[in-house]
Image (cartoon, rainbow, N blue to C red; front, side):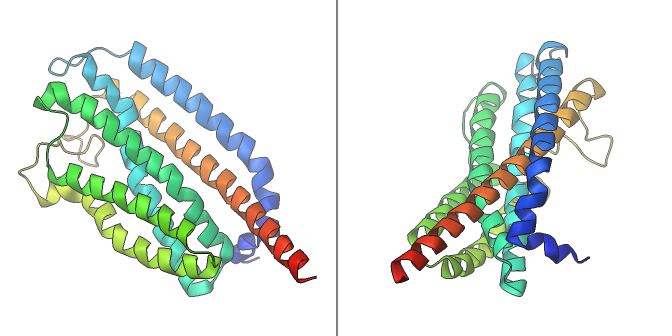
Length: 242
């Protein structure tokens, strides 16, 4: 059986129906455990105090704000190459979720940055590229809404997604490209010297898993909605012709 068979709308609807409760249940469990553990059972940092605990919201949100766009890029490339409608709808479905993650990351980053840097905002390379990524999310969603023909909209948004991927990459690696920024390095890294302390690292990983499951669940749910909307519009168009 080819993996592309799961891109068939009927099969997609069939296999996602039983998966969704499991995904959302796992997300709720991980988020409750991770956030309660992180906010109530970890000590204050010796330098940042209790403000360090915003890491349990900021880091997962920023991680999936970037990776949501990467997921949209992959889905858009699949649409351009293989013309699978579900992939285009999945990219469209992921955009509002990624936009929300970006907003959470920007908001929590501002709260975290004020006591650390003395300001809510700085034109740091990572912050600036993240803000531009947020604007690309807005543009992507607006472009989908502005074009009536869904295939044309999928084509044009795929191009926009490819261009915006530059800023998704910059958001992830800006600290490595420019050493002058205020933003700290990665909280999780293959280099043990860069990782946060284990007392913060363990609940943080659980929160990231929770955000990941939540992201997957929301994208699957919204893709199912997009498929239903597309079917409804097709039936309406058929009824008008009849």
